[in-house]
Length: 286
Image (cartoon, rainbow, N blue to C red; front, side, top):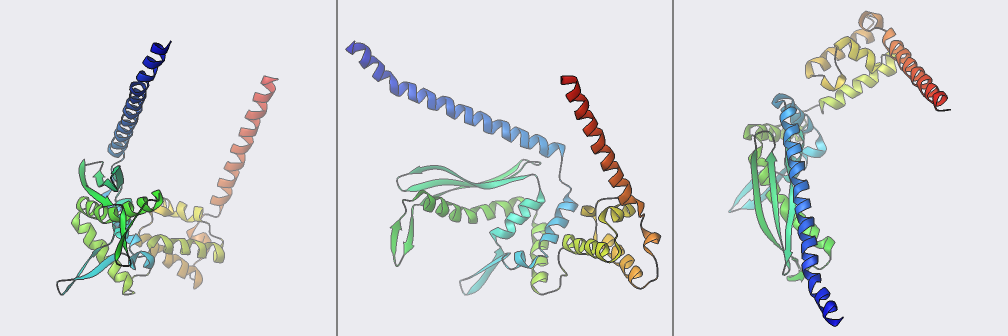
């Protein structure tokens, strides 16, 4: 009996190690499938470089972003400036089909090994930087050791942000980055009127409040969704509004008033059809 107990106890570590190996293998397999899926979607839905660039420039017209878009610090008697991590994140988000982030690889002896990366899923261009973060911060002239997991996480994320910024800027085309920086500079100087998306939204609101012209009516006239409006479309919209305001034309000259009614009728018909289908299914089940 004792021999059996001893043998069972001796087998426990190997069983535990085996389970850990299986879990690690399953996790690696899942990550691989996720990567394959992301690459497949990127190939199926490639980015439109022109639209991506326009989204970036539009975002740079927001004062809140422009104020934090650049960093500056003195070095060797000169001032060094460049795109901040906040601007780099906006570039990555609007460029599209780009995977980026900071991963903690392992913790050991009061330090963490982490990796920052940026990966263009379309072109398979990947930039990564591995670095070590000490679990300590300087406070009041001395080093304070970090033991709280949350403090350690924030320290790794903070140190990783600079590496992440560098990775993203190596993947995004340099001319796009320069245009984004220039647009942020113009916004800070007060030379931009605001993002196109916000201006179009305000115009749609003005049409509805003043002339009862809905977004559906405007989209029907232009032939596409308001999300696809360009600067040219916005200018045309303002011209129409001014024409109505000055009494030079009427709503009927520009828009089909029956558009909203037709869509409402269609929704009502679809709803009635769905209710009828549910009632028939219930009757059959009884």
